[in-house]
Amino acid sequence: MTPEPFRRKDLLSIRELSAGEILFLLDQTDSFREVNERDIKKVPTLRGKTIVNLFFEASTRTRASFEIAGKRLSADVINLSASTSSAKKGETLRDTARNIEAMATDVLVVRHSASGAAHYLGRELRCSVVNAGDGCHEHPTQALLDLYTIREHKKDFRGLNVSIVGDIAHSRVARSDIAGLIKLGAGVTICGPSPMLPAEAGCLGARVTTRVEEAIEGADVLIALRIQLERGAGAAFPGNREYATTYGITRKRLRGAKRDILIMHPGPINRGVEMSPDVADGPFSVILEQVGYGVASRMAILYLLAGRKPEEAIPASPPGLEEGSRTPASAPLRRTEDALAR
Ligand code: CP
Image (cartoon, rainbow, N blue to C red; front, side):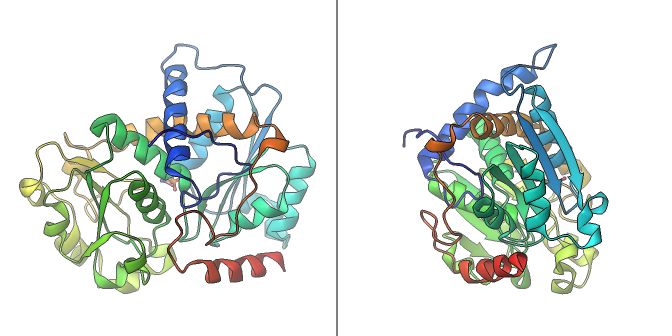
């Protein structure tokens, strides 16, 4: 596998990227890490460029790191949230986005509860669009920082066993991580109670288990996920205590783990539910390292998108038609897009 330049107009999903493009984005992240370690953490690379972060859902890590990344590259960065935008007055997503674009925006970073929202804007707008998380669909920049963190510690993805435990069905992070890991040659196991496993589990290319001990045994990396109550996951389990007892990652459960297992979590963590505090803060945890690499990873993405020449860019492919796409997710996504367009 060799890196292949990333020349797209947008970053919408991991499924649409080739393994070579993913490796290229990871290599680019290396270049920006050094800037974050300087005393003066600023370079003039994107001076005169404008980046707008448009968030229709809550966020700490993604929004802050896109803002920090843009500012460290000297771009002008504007943050808009649904609660303070004219979306509150009934403006459609398309109108909001086109008005932002009319102000000569170079990159629009969007988080939305509707799966397909970022793809929709990618086709509607001439400026670059970055998917900062769309419904249960994808969170490509989280996957890139997760892959970067794994590569830092394990060097090669081939032959690696990665287990993802928790609310897989509602997790955009899981879908992006699984796609990226499999493209790069890792084996993936997904684990959770049956109602938290996605209907399309068989199409994702991952091994499936409902026993957390089986997911831990032999894993080189374990990614725990939050139960997404805001997407209805609460109905899948009697309560937090039962979930913690049956699936929580605890020191006791890790006794059977590999001695160099990496413990990861995209955040936010529900301490004592999906993971005990001593594991979250323990010696195997790289959770805060993930957050740190997120800034360099997003600097690389903003640099490539804002610095692109429009005639070179590859436009977005319709969701479900991306390279390596094996999930039947395209029909629901198109329905969402039709709804967003109205
Ligand atoms: N991992 C992640 O997306 O965190 P935020 O919701 O805080 O952005």
